Length: 166
DNA sequence: GCCAACGTTGGC
DNA sequence: GCCAACGTTGGC
Image (cartoon, rainbow, N blue to C red):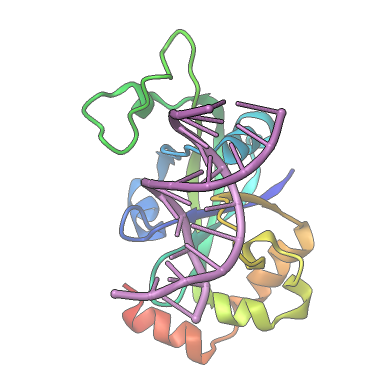
């Protein structure tokens, strides 16, 4: 079993949305490296941190799991979908892929990016590297558990996120 | 709102 | 195949 971090902008799709939907396809990945992670390495049962990017205090909001392995991202051949349509992808020869994820847990205390930066045990995480923009990154089991441990403690940042992160 | 870092595009 | 120009991401 592997561990991952999935980025999403809460304005577009948040962990709360996944909590409501229970299961959703992770569509719209249009980066080859992230696609390859999904298509080649993500397996049913893998565990993912759900990260909220591009908000006041970026943070890990909770956990979801992979419940269906990679299959073609059909939003790529929906011409009505301005953001996701890509004429290079067809049902016969799909270019982009997605997996299905299921809601698992919403953290009691959200784990804020600035708090993650201060944690030496997380210093190798790709998400913390300057300029890293990959929306899907592998993480280690230790990093996963460290972030879960952090979610059990309230911080100034986690309290702020609970009150006004959107 | 700014801008650094990165990925992609396309001319040559 | 190189690389400049451009667009996007996403933290700050």
